[in-house]
Amino acid sequence: MTSQPSITLHHLENSRSQRILWLLEELEVPYTLKVYRRTPEKLAPKELLEVHPLGKSPVLTDGQGSERLVLAESGAIVEYLVNRYGKEKFGVDESFSAWVDNLYWSHYSEGSLQPLLTRRFIYRIIPTRAPFFIRPIAKGLFTKVDQNLIAPELEKHGRLIESRLEQVASKGGWFAGLAHPTSADFILSFTLEVFVQRAPEYTGKLTKEYVKRVQSREAYKRVLEKGGDYALVFQE
Image (cartoon, rainbow, N blue to C red; front, side, top):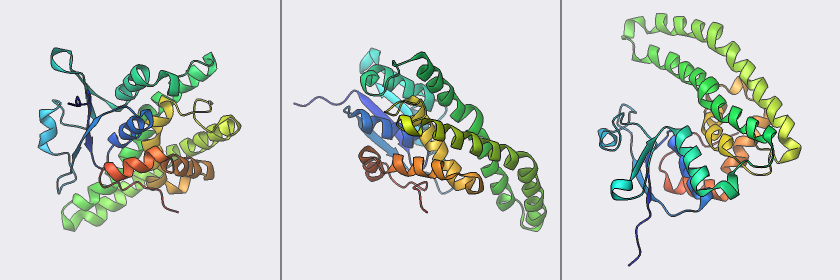
């Protein structure tokens, strides 16, 4: 009898969980995938509350019985998987410089860029959820907020990302400056997919090429087959 994989990924369609699924496919470790569909309101289903108290995705479980690990937060999951299952393939041992670059870009994704993209999304959604008679006012107000507060910051981030990709182009094109992806790339992949869609006016050529390169990898193609609907597939 074949034993069941110890790893289970609780995966929500159209979510940050996509990058965890990509990492698992790249690692080529056995795992079980449980896919959850969003509600008509585009929210996570209540079933995820049975997995983790916050009811969000991704959530990774590993091990059995009293040794079973339940881990949430994309960054923590990526670091766990790379350190436990992928040090030889995706680790950063080459130099102190690469280690620092990987550290920075891993935290940059959720710490600096993703919050701006989330706020832009929320500001665009609020007017559509407002009472009909105030929607024009709400749209005008939040458009101004976006133009004055969010757009200038996204422009700076677009330039920063392009600059970094130019720096590492001759070294393999990955954010830590190595010939292979590292945790920074797995974490940034989703954020840059979002950036391309929500801030196309600030998305540079190298950023688009990076997203296309990630999504053209064989492991990522398998993700698109297994993970359910995904709205962030790159399109010219």
